[in-house]
Length: 149
Image 1 (cartoon, rainbow, N blue to C red):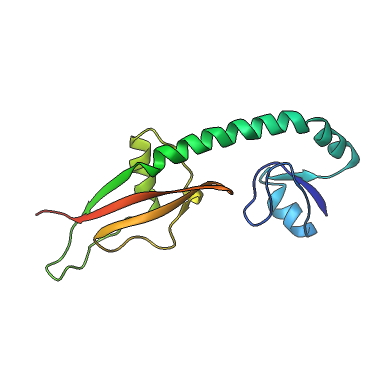
Image 2: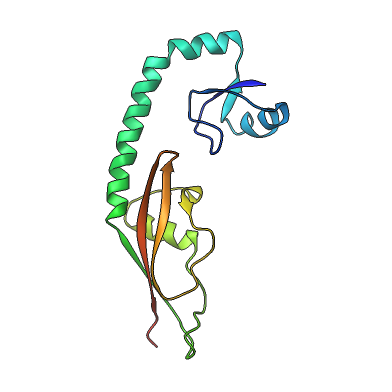
């Protein structure tokens, strides 16, 4: 099935691209979530007519995301967690904790943008990658310290 992507889709393509996908993927995943539309003749002609407008919008979005990436790269988030006498940390630092701290700094990002394979369960300084768009990524520093008793 031929579809026009309305949004960037990981491992598929960027907004505005025409892709051929399996029927079930298009009908059950992409279209219900508003990520794609069926590439009919009318939709294709409308897509071609709005190419210039779309390019300007994408350029403006990219500029905003690049600015946000610069802001994020300068940020170090600090967390304090209780640690046992053996040095084992109780609890962890998860994506939700990172989102809450960034929200306190007036930075709104999606949970899906944070590339953290597993929660941080150790004391130290870590780099966490944030993918703002498919081609715009940045890293923030996360410092986890032992909580004083």
